[in-house]
Image (cartoon, rainbow, N blue to C red; front, side, top):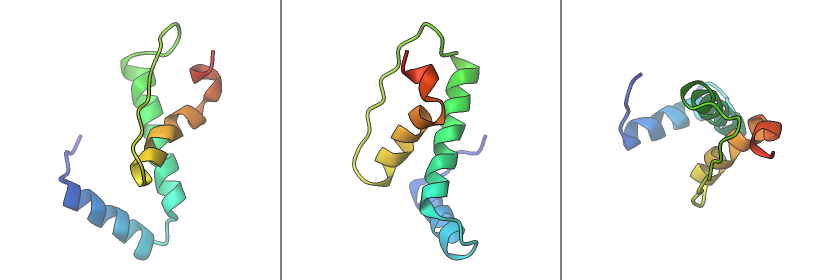
Amino acid sequence: MKISLLNEIRDMDRRAIEEYGIAQEILMENAGQAAYFTILKEFGIRNKNFVCFCGVGNNGGDGLSPQLSSPADFLQ
């Protein structure tokens, strides 16, 4: 896993949108799905409770997205 600095991540997001034409919503969905599968692999989901705190702006969308990836797993 590569750890990136905030300015590197912002630059990657900007390039993905401007140079490759990837919609910002798709980037958020992909980030959410990656988070969902990481939670699933590392912790499991069944019989566990999770709380997701989301800030404002794009990070809020990234935080909400894993719950939308598989609502049945989160809403039991």
